[in-house]
Image 1 (tube, rainbow, N blue to C red):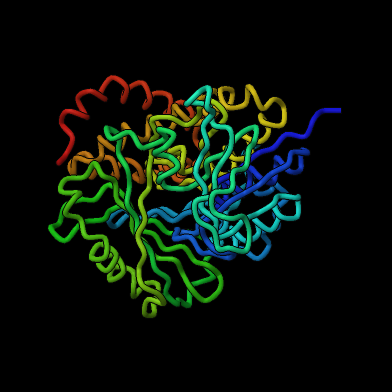
Image 2 (tube, rainbow, N blue to C red; image 1 turned 135 degrees about the horizontal axis):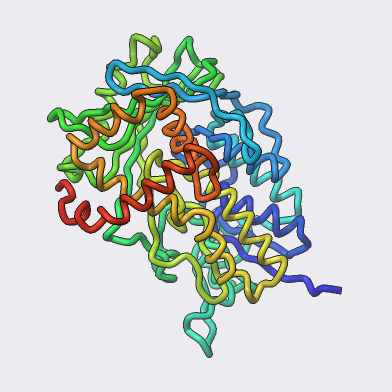
Length: 417
């Protein structure tokens, strides 16, 4: 009989929960830690792509209480394109809006039902081997609510999964931090009541401007939640001119004023909350550990989305762990690279391109100028385009990857500041 292996997970978001579900169902002993309380909320846009829905279905997660979304409405100036998600053999043909409190609760409850031992309000850091200071062998409790493991408790495991979201203390200890030469994003969101809360399309405004009238590489969104409210927010990339001076609250307020009448928005139901979007990492695995989801920089630079990548990478890490804990970290890094690296690298290079306002304006006119091109844009915004995508979208992606690779040195040297 195969011996029971022990997996330790740091972080109870979608990536960590997915890792726990797959590992526990596969027969591993799994312990998960999160510094927050059970039922914690996570600031997010709450949108789920068809790719994310497919990942949830593979985990057998019941998302019937999420609001069903059939497509995306893209707005660029006076041009509006409303398209349904495509039918493909790889992904579902619908998405959803599911507030993170509900999404995360369903996932972590499924992990608990699968047999994962969960310690809430408990912060841990990696333990390294005495004989090899790069080998992670477990974790040590740093802070605890007192109801579970005491401070200083050490727990050993065959592998540690870092699912801590935006890279923090644990990531710094392991060297899994953002590459300072690569772009990152900032986003802010709130909720408001709207009679259009049951709309079946997400809405994304691709033509944002800051208070000085500078074009912002990013977009504003309204995601109908189906519960009387909509999630309204804006996001921007660090490649834009005067990014350090960008006031997210003002940008959101300006976007809100543009959409207030068409969506008949009520007052904000909560204080707008902002968050950082790491879009790269210097390291996503090492001896005895892997980073998944946001902690691995797995975020689409062109839409700020990462839930689907978190679910997929967390699941993959545990699948490989079940097969062979010893080879899982290195094999995980290789497979994640095959799945995501080309697309995300192209997205990061593209973000340098659209950091220049005149290029951004030109690009947006092309991106939604016709149904054919808009369908490719839809695939990019839905995380449906990657190295395995067939047809026109796959061809355009491959061509863009090659062209941007050649232009990358120039784009970086001439980046807006």
